[in-house]
Length: 172
Image (cartoon, rainbow, N blue to C red; front, top):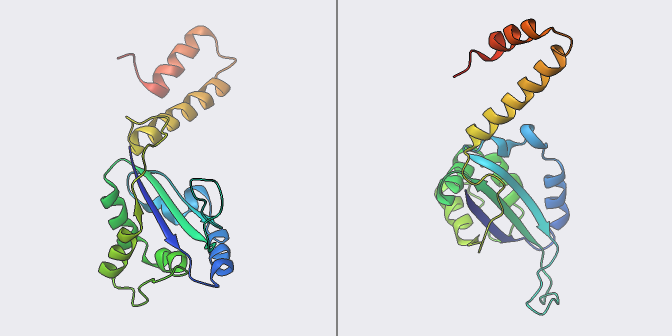
């Protein structure tokens, strides 16, 4: 699993509008970020100010927009998909950032975001070797087994085995 991280300065006076735009994004599977192929997790975070190595706020305090995505493929692929598949989302969120290319040109947007890319030193992933499709298939199987267990709790042994084979197929 690989990480795309962007840290973009918020335009002066735009923090409130950006916070409202972020609050208006639908959660979970309804999120427009779920349209990014191969992405396990993606999120925006409004950072009010950054701290130096000594733990004190950097001066002058300036809000930043942090975007992170954990994906199966290279970060460049995620960045390209973000720009090409979600241009309205990019404009509605990153449009509150300093220096945002107002003309909406995809090449300019991609270059702008690439200039604000961070290279994380590590990532925390509970299933680094599994793709998004594999994780979804495993979660679907878990759901199906739980539903089967609940529905078949009162079946006799022979009926249970037949119901299992009908639902999940014979043993491999």
